[in-house]
Image (cartoon, rainbow, N blue to C red; front, side):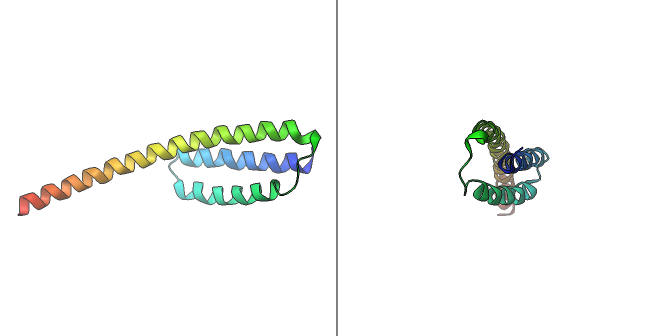
Length: 101
């Protein structure tokens, strides 16, 4: 296995961990892992991919993109849930204000 393939496996593993953390609603961990993954990706793509690694890299990139789609869906759901909670809090605040006025 080439160094590129090993580096790609590391990025895929990091992406999987990000997805696990997102499912656990551990968003701070997701953001920290994303920062590390971004750094690895910058180093990874700073050098050309060898022809013999092209298929492995293509497969790995596709897996990362699939995981990222799931991450975005989970992030969107968490955002919507937070927005709904904030809306309920605002409604409660308005109700208290109307009651005390």
